[in-house]
Amino acid sequence: MNTIVNTAWDPSLIALSFAFAVIGSFVALSAATRLRDRRGALDWNSVFTVGIALGGVGVWSMHFIGMLALQMDVGSSYSMLETITSLVAAVLATAGSVAFAARRPESFTRLLSAGFLLGMSVVVMHYLGMFGLKIYGFISWDMALVATSMLIAVVAATAALWLAFNSKTLARRLAASVVMGIAVCAMHYTGMAAAEFVCTTSERAAIPQGAGFISAFRLPLLVIATTVMLTVLLSLDQIYQHLRGRTLRAQRA
Image (cartoon, rainbow, N blue to C red; front, side, top):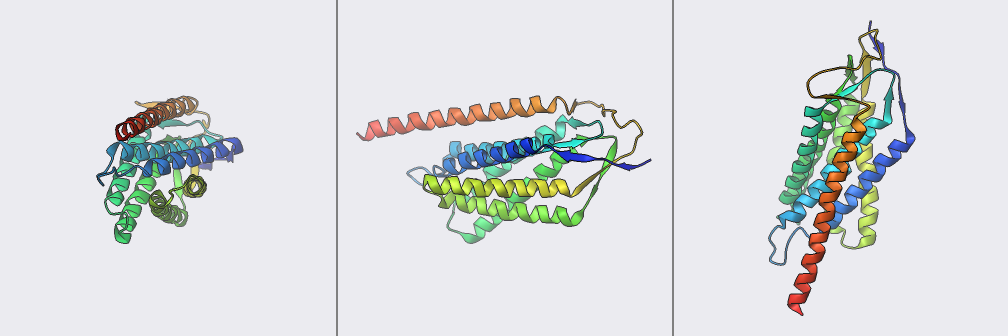
């Protein structure tokens, strides 16, 4: 007998997901100021910093913290394949889109193209992550809300790329980061609202088992470990940029 899964939300985790979206956006926008070196060539170290910060922390970590905020009255688990693939896709797609736009940031057509590609990659990451959620049942989708979430993602991604090349001061980057955090969360929670979970078993507490599955109780450990790893990578990059800047200043002195 099919029954609708009862859901509730943890406000503290929703707030935490927003914080991660803002932090990831701020680091990405800060790194975006270094996308091109003095000769005009792309600084690939900064490109991947943007990818890790926005795609990894601002989108992926935010997404799964948002997933943890969703509480259901059925057993659940997560497929590692979809979960990890969504992380790799988010980082690489963000880095690639930023690199594409950075080659000619003054081109409005290139900006729109890169924004569309980045927005759709966020959509793929989001719904791939949701398909990684396993219950004994299925998801019924509200396609109007799915389409709305896609539109939000594309608009937000295009705005993010524009902000990346037009937020030169600290105050503007802080303001832009809050705007981006709101946009990322709007896309995520609209996508979540599009999903109605349906249970198809009488054993509602049963946890789906399978190769590469982890229980929902262990997901926080995965998210924390991955976020810490991404944060360490970003910190190492900041240290490298600081030392590099000191070396360059010493050489010019």
